[in-house]
Amino acid sequence: MQSLVDCTFSGVVGYKKEYNDQLALFVAKTIMNISWFFKVPFFIYIYFIGFIAILLKLKPLTSFSSEQKINFYNNIVLKLPFSGSLDKLIRSLGFMKLYDLAAEDN
Image (cartoon, rainbow, N blue to C red; front, side, top):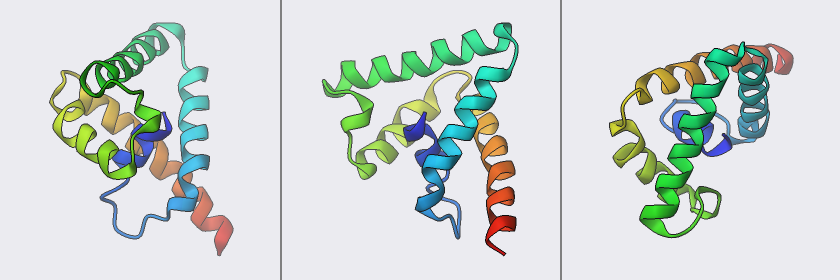
């Protein structure tokens, strides 16, 4: 999940990398709290993305460098069906948490 959050917010202007762990944790907890018929397809899709990474690069997504993660995300993940929905979910949940974090900093 942390790789997906990192790749989703890599192009956002003013994004601070130190928030990445908190955002990934918030997105994962939120997805865990939704009802099962939404949760199951999301987790199947996330594990499918990890499986594709192992098939194509012969190593898990967590061992990619940040540049490799972004390239994999832009070249492979965004071309998969339903990737736009997952991207919008992660982005909207992340922006909600970023607003809270920015309010705490001020």
